[in-house]
Image (tube, rainbow, N blue to C red; front, side, top):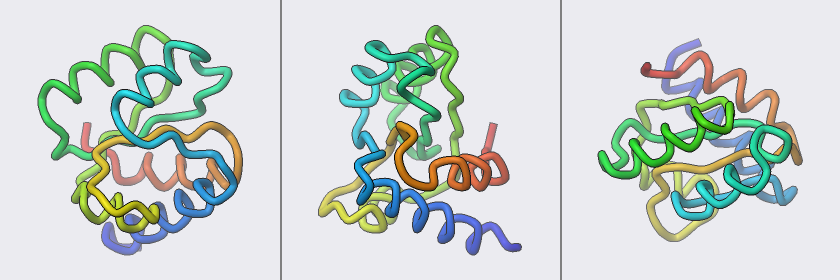
Length: 114
C-alpha cells in the first residue's frame, strides 16, 4: 500500500476513534493527557512532522518521560484536522483506547518519519 493510502486509512480510523470519544486533539490537551494518565490512559500520540519545533520538543519530552508511543508522520496539519472533523489545523493528537486505536497505531508505525 502506498503512503498516501496508508495516511488516508490512518486518518479515517482516527476519525472513528474521535467519534467514539477516543481522540485528544491539540498539543496542550495531549500534554495534559499524557501527564495525567501516562501510557495507562494514552495508547499513543500521533504528530505531524510539520508541527512547530516547540511543539515537537514538548510532545517528544512528555511522551518519552511517560513511556507513551509517539509516531511522527509526514502529514499536513490542515488535512489531519479536516479528516478528524475539526475546522482548524491539527499538528498532534492522542489516541486513548476508544474505537479502533490499535489499527490506527499500526498504520502510524508504517508511516513514521523518525
